[in-house]
Structures are given as structure tokens and as C-alpha cells.
Image (cartoon, rainbow, N blue to C red; front, side, top):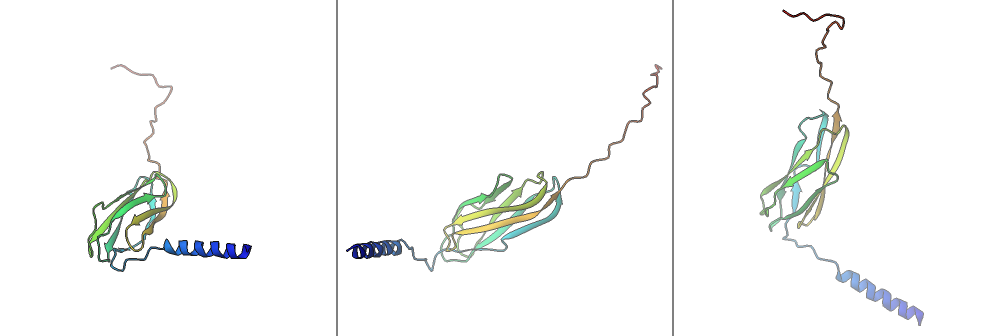
Length: 149
């Protein structure tokens, strides 16, 4: 009796899981990026930390980006907010705070209504410390007596 009840519960659970599977829309929007990684290389502290990721809607319906989130507060994304029509391009502009020294390895997660609903973009590189500026030294003799003319 226990085996029959267990089998029945298992069967109902499997049917329930299959019912939750959402079929993919073959005519739906699809996001295709020109590149998914931007490498700054080695840059100096305070340098321009801007880069851009371009994408195309290769699907047959309008593409909508519902969220673009960076992995930390030092990276700020700005993206195309209006629907991207089939065959059209959009952009995600990313600004990295280059006042932070060291290795850059950050991600930007793009959420859309595309067949691939999540795409992870990456920025990488290294920020080196800006060299100290040479300030002329004042070579005044501390024992000198001021003169009034």
C-alpha cells in the first residue's frame, strides 16, 4: 500500500513539473551581442573607464531589456530602454570607476524577454596607480634673514 501511495505521489509531482515547462517561442526576440567581454588592458588611475556593448535583436518580435545589473557599485550600466525591433541594434554603456586600483573583473547581467533571457557580460583589465607629480621644491635657506626693500 505504501508503495502505491508513493508511486502515485511521485507521478503527480512529475506531471506538475512538466506542466511548469514553458515552451520557447520560435518567433520570439533574441539578443546577440557583438562581444561579451571588454578588456581595458592596463590603464592608469583616473583614466576613461567607459566601454560599450552593442547587440542586435535577431528574433522576429520586439526585444525588451527588463534589467541590466552590475556585480558591484564601481560599475554603472546604462542601456537602451525602449523596445528593440527585429533586426535593429541597441547598446549597453558601462562606466567603471578607474580610481579603484588593481585587477578589474566585473560582470554585468542582462535580463530580457529574449529566447536567451540572461546574458552575462564581463569587463576586465588592470588599473595602475598614477605616477606622483613632480612638484618643484622650495629651496629656501631656513637661516636666511628677510630683507625689506
